[in-house]
Length: 312
Image (tube, rainbow, N blue to C red; front, top):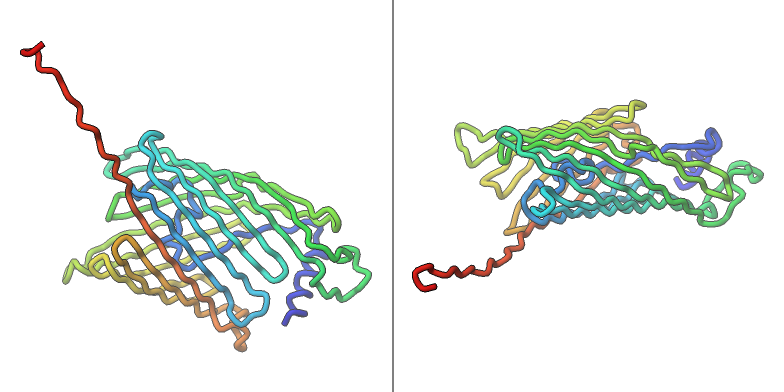
């Protein structure tokens, strides 16, 4: 299987001196708005940390392994929120480390609130060329036997609107400048590919028992070369436990469960791969774990004393 992966990468590098960088995907996308939309920063009126660990296409050697940690919080002094994400993504002989830092300005609009956000992003990409097994030993693109790295910076922009406990909607774009970097020895150029995201979700209490809520949501993502959409449906009980299904077009059917304990939330998703990668048992699916924690900082106000004019 490692030779198959090597052949695939060699063909990509040989066919083009420039290749595009695609962003990682997550199944529990309804809990991952901070990673794709900078306008979301601070919208929960608390300081929140959310972590994801994802193993995609288990059993397929060289398959993506992704870890992500995001943090955001409302800052009244700035009339908005601050947010940041850190991600590591490993695909075969390729390692990526990405950091994004951003700010969202909040506006009251109708019954809800609008976040207008921007982020600066930094991506460090490393490829270990020593692990490749070239079909042609004289291939000039694979003469390097070193670990080569390149650093790229870019920006993201997003709008996020929510009415608490009712619905949310967002539109965003990442890798807006489509910046590029070059691996010096091989002269291979890597360019960030601009991505667009549209998200939306609704909370619908079931009439027969309002303790149960239906939470439909959707995520559409495209780079205009390909488009993918996730349709999600969760059922939540008493705002404590949830479970449901998701369908990712041409890729997977996802089962999800989760729950809350005090300020913590936990989620688990399992993807049943429906694409060609999952055929003939080449992959046993994808597994994703989510952990979140939110808290507030209460600043004790010092009582102010006033002089009574009667005793001046």
